[in-house]
Image (cartoon, rainbow, N blue to C red):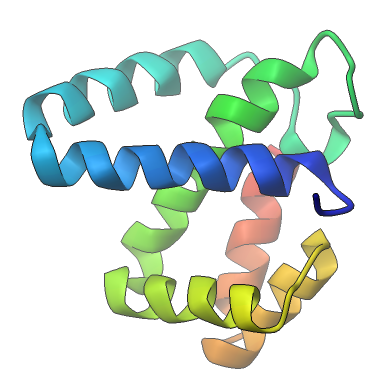
Length: 119
């Protein structure tokens, strides 16, 4: 269990999207569109607090969609490398993730993802 719940839940759902995209592209597109719409009014991932009633949509849907958007920006190869680095280094916080993203890519991508987390 990492220190920030969005990291557990959003990354788990991100993984689910990856599997679904590989094995059922039609359902992937349908579910992604549905959850993107549902999460529009969710509070920002960065302001969702542990066990708060309003955190579910942020952790489970909005965060994973932000990860999908990050992948679209940096590409699947860099995203895979980023995730591998996070696992290898046992990163547990948003700041550690953002720093790894910046180290692997650049400050622009870090700012992009920080903006998503605050939206």
